Image 1 (cartoon, helix red, strand yellow):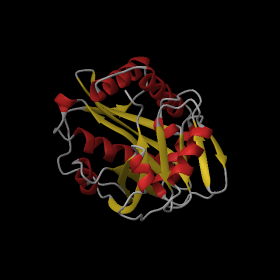
Image 2 (cartoon, rainbow, N blue to C red):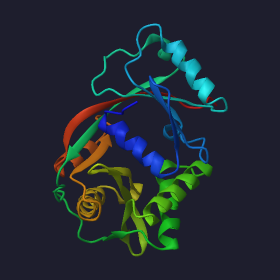
Image 3 (cartoon, rainbow, N blue to C red):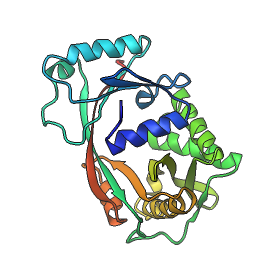
Image 4 (cartoon, one colour):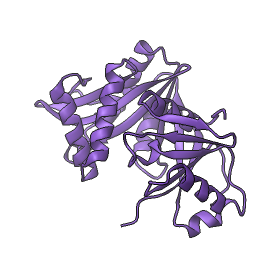
Length: 259
């Protein structure tokens, strides 16, 4: 199966770089991350076309067969424009539809409110990576094995030269971070833009987006920078201000573990 949507094309490329396994079933792709089974979008099915009426139960059965131990359900759809209505069977099964926006640019611009006070640099030391994990905990309100495994995957990808994680530091404390990854084919994909809640509205995220984009062009030879955002969230306005433009939609369905 040839993945055509930019969002999922770069998603799958990054998951493979992190160690995920893929299996092409013809009409869908299986993406499996054995060492992090709680990572929804490391363990999902990518459907090759929009699921038609009456096919929802079949897709749920396929997911259960591919991931018999999973407590979640995650289904992506490799289209760039989908219908407004979600399949009724998915809604009945408690799956939440999601549409996010894939934005691209050739050369990211400095943000309007560029931060000049924080120290902006790549993460490198063991203390940097410890702080990276702790910042994720502060942003998401919880830690646990999932975030620990994601933090290890970030570091492995960076040390292999296929990604760079940039941080904004104030007084030695990590206040904001993001990653930019070499997805191949001239594409670079941003990941995990996180800002400590008390440090928001200081221009840190936009400054990181700009610096990381410059790095991706120079270090990876990227000609197209890709970032994905919720169209209802404020972050998308920041990315547009840095030169990104809406390119495609990305569609998925998810049901988190019950309880």
